[in-house]
Length: 281
Image (cartoon, helix red, strand yellow):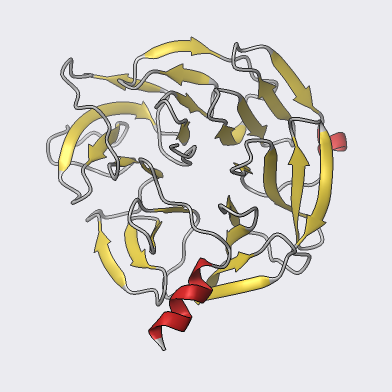
């Protein structure tokens, strides 16, 4: 089953082609970097779909670029609560409690969770029925949320250098873990652990909070996502080998994309890199 995939773009798309190629495994969805086929208009942020070899499959103008998530059926929800189908045509909208959203997570069944900059969590059932969790009930949150493979556990970094877990199926907190983690961009791993991008490294933690792997970074990054090829990771516009940080591919651009996603990304476990390191000896 395709995992819900974080990161990529759009409130409004213009010039949508009628024969847009279908999204397939390994495709890269990018926004916010120039493309030679689009007007040199600084107010227009382009939206692109590239194949696994980074050849442009589709490009359009996007009047603004925001992160969105693709669920297992390639349904799309962006940070502002707009929903799109697999051809990026808007099909509905979700009323947000806050108008300054910062992160979105979508379950495979269409449930949507949008974190506002003021700490409110807007929750929408698959049919769009809304509910909210107030910041004084949710507590401290970092810069993003992610949904674990169990489709119930939201993970995020919080105060006191810890990773926090909230069960959206039971409306209850699970115990915090990884209590010595600097704040950073967090992604859920396949076995219940997390990977957290810090200023100087990307670290894996298992479900008990034990650090299992850490990759020193030679480049900074505000966010990351996994690739459809095992052992590969995207940080901003570069694709790196997770075992040693070697840069394998990059998207040429004068500045980093505003958002990025990989269709059907392979989400590793917290101990997957331990196996790779032993095999390399």
